[in-house]
Image 1 (cartoon, one colour):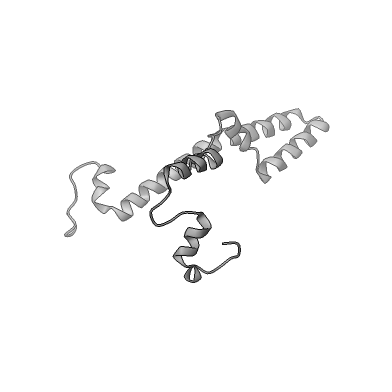
Image 2: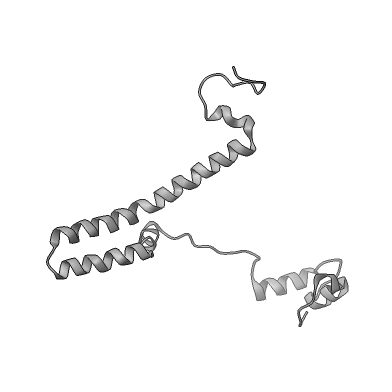
Length: 135
């Protein structure tokens, strides 16, 4: 498949030829050879640690503006303003992942309630309400 083609234009046997296989699959020797060349068919994903996640929270226009303003207030000697701005930046960055996590959990629960109305009893107290009318 050296050139781009529409899926409807590709013949099954062309795919087999391009991938050097057949409708019977690969033989053991070919499997071993391809494993040595390409490795396992897996995606390696390294989950960032808590420090890296915290530092990534500083990648925001609002944070950049606050840092510039904080540096400016430090230059002109307004130390109270500088400390308050630095505190806001750190507090925003420290709480942002937890706020995002809470929003995602709330959205997931809302979707469950919308698409699986029989599960509402999990989130309510008291007897399970009937669907027939007001009770």
